[in-house]
Figure 1: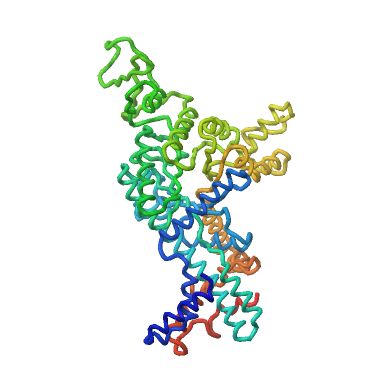
Figure 2: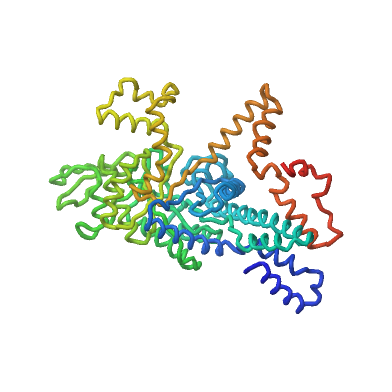
Length: 532
């Protein structure tokens, strides 16, 4: 509702309640406008609609792909969106990603943990709520500055300026964007997955990413020892998440079905199968083992199944886990993806061991032969050595073309010795266009970096500590941080304002009028950063 209409509505309401005479309708209207979203479910419904519209736009034009960066704190998410609006004028097609890895490493009460679902599962919805709290604060912060400017224009009698600012208020674009939220393998059985999904949705999540590993043996997608579950188990969890969305009235909720099968060589269970060729039988067909002819070939503890009309003694490790056939990963990925899309998932996530468009495209083409509108979320992971991978891809392409590569050592291409070469320049260009190229050629709708702020926080802290505790002293902070904030117009240089000091001052005036004791007077050192 436009700000002027809010004032009219509240003026009528206040007249009906004479004891509320100290409340000004402009103040109440302003507070309403600055708090557009009242609950997490409001946010989930709003962002689900955005995401569905973006998916349709991508289907019409693959250049309309979406992006996100991972977050482990609300302030980081807030600053990303403030920066996006500052530099690009709009948050369109730009989301946030909530990484289970970062929750485990940075938010667990147990301290830093590996990405194995050992952290408190309630910390995931807690972080979603925190992210949206900070994004709502960004709305209030930005609008507060507009309202202050509106008051200044009104007091100066500049009606044209006041109308201009009021139009900006009415057309304000929120910092609230979709969050792709990592539920790992569900932290338990399907009921546990449902209960956690509800908490995540109530906190604001419109998109939940679920992986096909076993929950009690869950591993990071880029580590060894991954164990997958039969399709029936995974589909039960997809159903659990969908029912959580429907129960809470988020009918457009998005489910990302992630498969770790490319790098997972183990399973904990042999799938239930009723007839040859059913889904369970297809899963079991990938199990490694030997066909046998009689019971004499069975030893104590061996497991035997019927496969292709014959008895097959499957390979079982000392851990009790069963092993898949070597080289079956891509076939299992394709079956996982088709099955997930045919049973309720909206998007796919294929965890790969390297960023290679040809590899991804090969699998997506097979999936799209069955499900033509299949779309991916792809992890542009810091676990990949992007520089080395793409230099090697250029090296291999040149070698295949017959180009002389004798001046390069393929195993040493990460070396700084190659940084100024044509090969390195071309590799960097391929990295730069990777997301657009993969969106166009390999069906990737959403590109994300899982752990960017983990690495940026470490890098910037290292640089500051090296200078501050070294010869630079205070200059390390002044030149390397504060002066850069000023030069680049980064709002955090006025950290009191970013934390809500000005909003609080205005509220004090709303509550107490001229008796308000405000923090923003002449002795507030934040004034040193005005007009710069």
